Image (cartoon, rainbow, N blue to C red; front, side, top):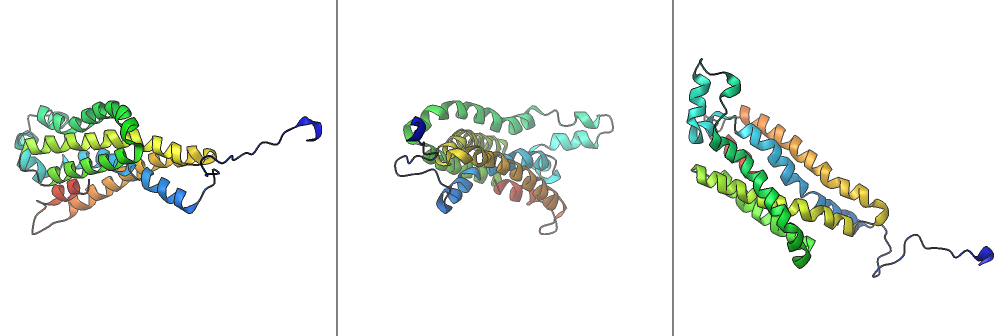
Length: 213
């Protein structure tokens, strides 16, 4: 070539893929990024559920007694260690599972781990929605945390590998975008169910919220 300059193809084909955005690539990335919904939704929903009176009546009646007592400061009524365990067990399980997920994804692949995390999350949400005691609540939250840990570790990697190099950052940011959507959706559902009455009461409101996980 003139001047000894060799043209470089900006989008070299790798295994038949030239790095172009196609409909299938967009749909695949959107579906993978949408796994962030489960994490965002749980972050937002747990705070609303733990303030619902029917939920507290069934699992934490001592908190309601503290609320009714004029001697207790309102900032101190939620000092129950079991309630704290209910909330934090998801994040502890997510931390541990995300650390283990890095090696497991190497062995089984990112897509399989995303599917596995979704299945575990579904089982955990079913346990929480049908919970009749504290043990079922905690076990459900642990399973939710395992599902979140696996999907949060595998989904961004999967997006980085499947997205065209030029658009990798944009598609990867989609995961965080869906996390935000999940938080907003949880807030809207908490508000709507707190005001809604089923069968003359709001007994099923918290179950409806948790089963959406």
